[in-house]
Structure formats: C-alpha cells, structure tokens
Length: 208
Image (cartoon, rainbow, N blue to C red; front, side):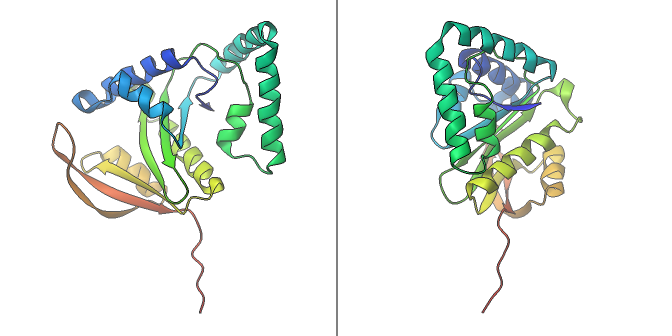
C-alpha cells in the first residue's frame, strides 16, 4: 500500500530509508542526515510502500494517540476540511488527511519522492528493497507521484537515471518518459553517466 510519510515517526522513518539506501546504492547512498534533510526540504512530496496489514496497526496507534491528545484531533479535522474546501484533493493531500497522528514507522518496502515548485516536477529518488523487487511496487509509486504532480499543475516530470540501470530505464520507458540528454559522471563516487528524461504531464495544444 502506498501512503504519505507525515503520519509516521520521522526518526524511525529516516533510519529505515537510509538503510534501504545503503542496500540499494552502496557508496552512492544518501546518508541518514541527507535523508532527513531531503524529507524536510521545501516543496517535496514523498511516499512509502508498506504492507497492507501495517495500515491497521498504524491506525490503531494513531487512535490511541488521539485519545491522549484532543488538539491533534482538531488539527486533523482542519486538514480534512481544507482539502474538501479546495475541490479535488491531490493524492498527497488525501494521504495526509487520512490520519493526523504520529505512529511508529511500519516496515518499508519502497520509497519515492519528487520536488515541485510551480513549473516542472523533478523525481528525486525511487527505491524498492531487494526482497520486494519485481512486484510492481516501483511502478505503482511512480504512477502515484506522476498523478499527484499532474493534479498540482506540473508541466513535466524530469529525472536522472544511471545509464547502466536497465530495470529503471525499462520502467521509465514503460511509463512514457523519453530521453533528453546525457550528464557525464553525474553519479559519484562511481563516475557513472546519467541520462536525463522527461514525461509531459499536460496535453499539447496545437493551434494557430
């Protein structure tokens, strides 16, 4: 199941994502501090994929927290009302409004996030734990981010990918991304080149 990150304990979440980073990216992995800074950076939207049975556990933890903190419950009502008043909520807003309490971070199968400040959206990272790969998790997370960016008004989604990352390249091509260019020695410390890729999120209007 794909969900937002704001409902979960940030310290535990950072540790688990950093662990996956080391598992997936080796020397090029983000440090724990880099993960923390990225999740807290402005204009970022991040999601995680968790087992379905982790949702009920998180909901129970949130319910217990709500019984101890009436103020938090009131804030959750404000968030939900704001999303409803603004019209159709984006996937990110729906995920945030679904629960307002901080629960222990569940097991994380995958994580992904993008940056958007009003024009193009930029995919920042996407990763799936080795034991959960080839189950469609990366596909589902990326589709979620694409739809969220489209609903927020992004014109395109951009990304960089290692030229030797065949599974990622296959996924991006499958979802309609096309190559724009090449960035030499983009990935450090391995000195691996990166392709830049783009996906149009708004239909082209042809006129005179």
